[in-house]
Length: 139
Image 1: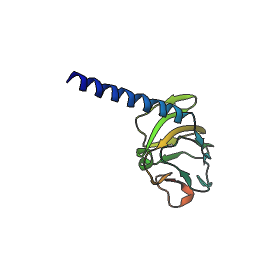
Image 2: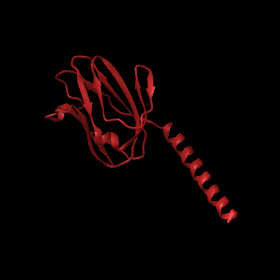
Image 3: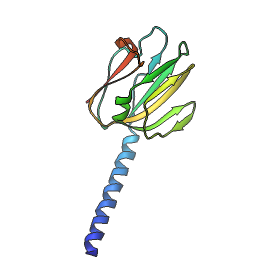
Image 4: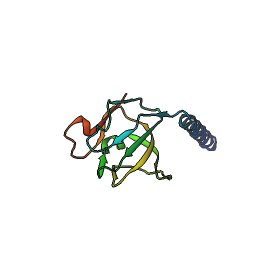
C-alpha cells in the first residue's frame, strides 16, 4: 500500500512540475494584439480578433478620456485564464473579471490565455452596432 501511495505521489509531482514548466515556457511566448482604442465616435476595433485557445496574449485597452466608458465582456472573461491586469504600473492578478470602466484617459494591459473556443465580445453594455464592440474569435 505504501508503494502505491508513493508511486501516485511521484506521478502527481511529476505532472505538476511538467505543467508548471509548460506554463512558464508559454508565458515567454506572448502575442501582442492590436489595442482596443476607446474614443468618442470611433470604433473599438476595426476587425475581429482571431485567437487560438491555449496561446498567451497581451491586449491593451486605451481610452483618450473623451467619454466615460464601461467595457463589459463577462462571457469572454469567464472563458480565459487571466495572468494579470496592469493599470498605471500596478499589476493585479485577479481570479475573475466582469468589466472595466474608464472614467478618464488611461490604459489597461491584460495578459491572458483563452481556454475555450467560441465567439465573444468586449464592448459597451448598450452596444447597438459592431462599432461599439470588439469581436473575439477563439479557435
